[in-house]
Amino acid sequence: MTSTLVRRHRPRPSSSWTRDAHARTRDWAEIQERMLVPLYEAVYERLDVGAETHLLGLGCGSGLALLMAAARGATVCGVDTDEPRLDLARERLTAPRAPGGHGAPGGHGAPGGHGAPGRSARLGPGGPESPCVQEAAANAAFTVVTAFEPLSALDAEGSGAAVSAAASTLAAAAARTERGGAVVLAGWGPPERCATSGVLRVGARLADPMYSPGERREEPTPARWRLCGRDDLEELAARAGLRPDGSGRVACPFGYADMDSAVRGLLSTGLFDAAERATDPTQVRKEITEALHPHRRADGTVWMPNVFRYLICRV
Image (cartoon, rainbow, N blue to C red; front, side, top):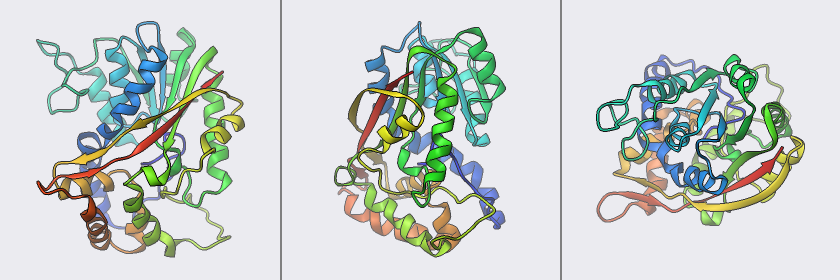
């Protein structure tokens, strides 16, 4: 999944990508994003997120994590560099609630179908320097900052450039957080505990022809999955000047109704974009499908157990 901190994309030369972008944004919101709900719930429960919480979501995507925090009574603010996902977040967090407490139509609310409880949410493009963040912090410092999407997507080659940029982003967010406030980072657990890691390696392998060691680029490299090291979260926290204050592991199985949903959900993460440019979308779909076959159950559903890790830091 693309990083909450540094999302690096190049425009596709193919017009088919433009046509597919909206569909993939919907696939993310309707299929893939909910796979991390156990992570969101575990963090919110541990931090006792509620009416006294002023939360900033970095890389808020289509807003499900923010919606869940708002449902607990938190005041929320979110930023993201992906405009289509941000548009969906606005739909979710600003739609009026229907009688009976349900949110916007179309199935884009929190699990169970309930929308946010009427509190205003500030949303905007970019990062901690976004005007919406400055406005929110001017009223009250944040008490919780979340960077939920897996750190392993930070950099296509695992180089230090993206990590440095991520650390700067976190430091900027921490500067708007009250003393003692929490900053939460997340990453994939050990690869042997993450069944999806084998599928994601397909994208990394197919993308390899696009990159050569030491190559200089004027354009940013796109996100590409890599293994998350044991101490990656702690290293990033240290570079951002944050103090670790506890961590945890959460089971986040990826479950899909059928093979087509699984492929669409995984493609929506953006982690196969480089592979599609290096080969072609048909080839990528074919190889993802082959990699998913061991995880297909007798009833046609696809099930992959995964473990995610989170690190809580203090400002």
